[in-house]
Amino acid sequence: MSYEYIIEDNIVIFKFNNGKVNAISSETLKGLNEVIDRVNNEEELKGIVITGEGRYFSGGFDLGEFTSFESGEAIIKWFELEEEVMYKLFTCRKPVIAAVNGHATAAGMIVSMACDYRYAINHPKIKLGMTEIKIGLSLTPAEMEIMRFGLGTEKNMRDVIFKG
Image 1 (cartoon, one colour):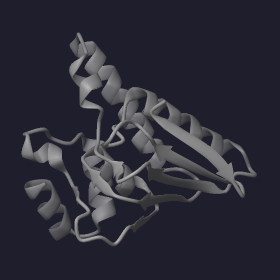
Image 2 (cartoon, one colour):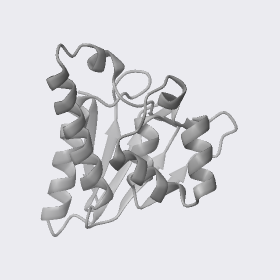
Image 3 (cartoon, one colour):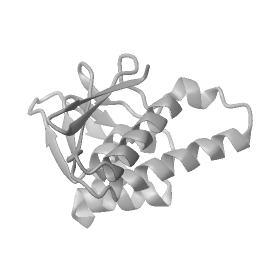
Image 4 (spheres, helix red, strand yellow):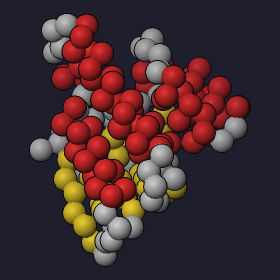
């Protein structure tokens, strides 16, 4: 499974757990979608903490899955799911915390920016950024707005969006 979650003291702890970089697959997105719906609909659940296994929070989309799509329609469906989950995460009615335990790049960075609060490990080698920029991929409109909100200033936004 590409993720796991437990409930402790009425808080859902959702952990990316997909290979070395905790890649975000469609399975991961569906699991996060279910958790967000559950937290929004169950009064006793108080919020979500998102973290990763090992040295990565998340290195972004599962490129192996992404390159295996056989049609443009499959890619569109994947991005529709991703947009739905990011929107739900960004607008969750209860607090969402990103416990950034390691590298957070590409979609991992976007997930952290969609959370209400971000707490990151203080380590000089931790990488935070938008690596897709360096290979020529652009952000969707929803991803762009999440990043704008999470980064807080136009200067931060420009630095991340144009430099990765």
